[in-house]
Amino acid sequence: MANVVILGSGGFGLSLAVMADRCGNHNVTVWSKFQSEIDEIRTHGEHIHKLPGVPISERIALTSDISCVKGCDILVFGIPSNFVRNVAKLASPFTDEKMTIVNTGKGLEEGSLKMLSEVISEEIKTDRLVILSGPSHAEEVARCIPTTIVASSENPEASAYIQKAFANDFMRIYLNDDVKGCEIGGALKNIIALCVGICDGMGYGDNTKSALMTRGIHEIARLGKAVGANINTFSGLTGIGDLIVTCTSMHSRNRRAGILIGQGFSPEEAVEKVGTVEGYFCCKVAYQLAQKLNVEMPITAQLNEVLFNGGDVREALGKLMNRPQIYEEF
Ligand SMILES: NC(=O)c1ccc[n+]([C@@H]2O[C@H](COP(=O)([O-])OP(=O)(O)OC[C@H]3O[C@@H](n4cnc5c(N)ncnc54)[C@H](O)[C@@H]3O)[C@@H](O)[C@H]2O)c1
Image 1: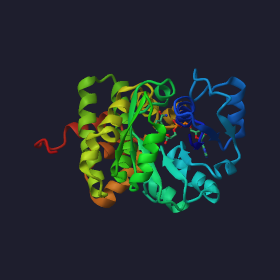
Image 2 (image 1 turned 90 degrees about the vertical axis):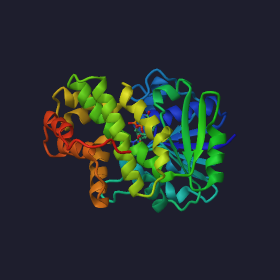
Image 3 (image 1 turned 45 degrees about the vertical axis):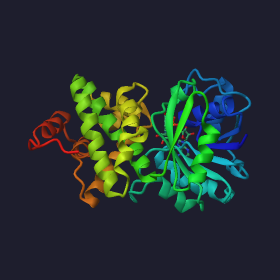
């Protein structure tokens, strides 16, 4: 049994809290920056906006007091990527070197182009940072639907500890030491899911979806290779595994936002309607990173045009289809 503090009371934070409480028999505390969010969860017994239909047990402590971090064994970040640095700054004074820090957020930091593991490491002094990533919709994790994910760390003892703490009959956890590969795969699959959604919204079919997913993982892997990731990671759960689940499920907010864009809503309207759409932000950062590292990412480049330069979706697709005809390279 461990003392687990989860930062973020959104869909994923709460789903992990429910799982850790029910299957792991851990002492679980969930922190939210917003007292109103906590009050609402207690009033309804569930988060009616982020995880409807999943009861949040009274055993799970809810607080907006960040000092709850002090003395815990496992500190989990369940925070959308844009806010990870600020929350890490808030939590930092209450952390210690024995704590295992876990990041579940998927994205890259705007401006610095950094991965979230780098962002957290800059704010919290630790050699026990673990990335939990892979195909794991909150709606299914919270309902004990069999799920497989990856615990990735440069510290094998820390990732093995998290594997043991969170694995159960419904959650199988593999180990991996390629932190960069896991993070790039988790962050960039949202870009491809937005593109798949756009094509769904325009009425295109399964051929288009398969093309985007297959060529998508190749360009993600190319960027991964350029930042020093292991290319094999992209054929695993945090690469193609997460890409499949995000591109094919209506749980995916990125895909749902894409569908709205494909139906004619502006990107801003789509993001406003859907909520947390991390692919929107990640696309800009990934495009900038690809340019900086001189990596060819045609799908990301076209999405960047559509999202930020007023590009037309049909024109963007036309440009992808009319690129020079080449050998299929891997
Ligand atoms: N939802 C999933 O199925 C899932 C699965 C795996 C990983 N993730 C990752 O987990 C992270 C969180 O996703 P989510 O689905 O829980 O998001 P969410 O939109 O459901 O919840 C976001 C939560 O973050 C907190 N938050 C919002 N703004 C904040 C701010 N300015 N400062 C501090 N906290 C703030 C709030 O508690 C809010 O409820 C994301 O990076 C996502 O990629 C999500």
